[in-house]
Length: 454
Image 1: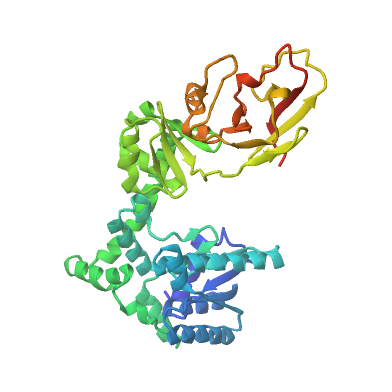
Image 2: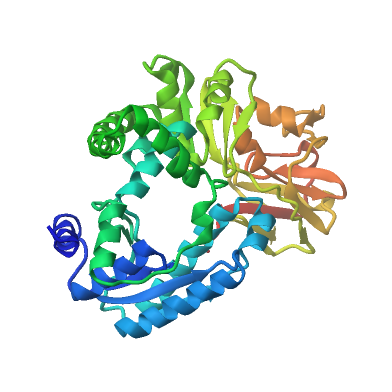
């Protein structure tokens, strides 16, 4: 079967139910063999498309040659070409990542920007990104992931559909693509970096797979068959794992609470923990650290780039990483409303003494005679102390919060109100005994905490 017929058949099997007939396809074109053949197949199949080319400025004159070639290619097929130059090396250095990762991040971010602009200009269409990944790329990806240790999810290889990204050449071997180019007199440009083994994938392509083929001549075909089998196995695996995780976690706002005793009873514990923490940017190498939390002291934690897993008594708490709050609100006078975080603090001067006893921790009364403005509203910090209502001895705020059985993340969200370097109120919990109203009180300040209307 001709490659174009196989391409159209593969499209019918995998994408026709996803991509509407009027969709616009943005083709990621480097100028190399695979992407140029993709342009030919897509245009001959009658799709509405345009080209996006990234000049990563990593190969000097060669990068500019590729950009010029792709621009001419667009003229040849009479389709629009978008080009952009990237300071890839600088971006990689600034973000402390490899040039390959930098290029991938910048490429897909720009592609998405192009789709967003197109959608704004014509919202009646659907927009997709097409890349020229083929079966050989898939083989190399699986081998790379296997040695890297990405788990079962890495062994399904490159997915045909990933959101708005479509890979319609995954069915084809590179030899078939090259044969099609020769038959149709299609020209392309060679990327000299493909010849070097300094990149992991090139090393796998040029060194690892040829050596393995000496022992197992059908290794590539076997890997392609395994990709299909593992994809189906993964679906069963994920369904089972997610069912277990759903029974373990207790959502509480932005946090997930996991009971330690229940977690420790799970079979294949390391696997369950890995799948539990993976969505929060943890790696397989951190699984032993998370498991050790189960028997560690309270408030110990394991951090990822975005989250912390904290030991809190009989629970592990998965919480977003806290950004230290240094902001202090200055309250110059009474009758003010202060919005901080998701809360609104309202301060009113009462003319009359309330006839009802207030027992709401979010609504308190203070003797105005003992209050000195300006007040400071800030996060609780080490060394803070106060005299809890009803007590004549001072107590550290940190000890009070422990007695309230607050988790580490809850403690980090506690604010205090300060007057003349004295804690007046642990906001939402307890006032200082020195500021309570008494039979001798003549002026009262009412402080009320409400959810902010934002």
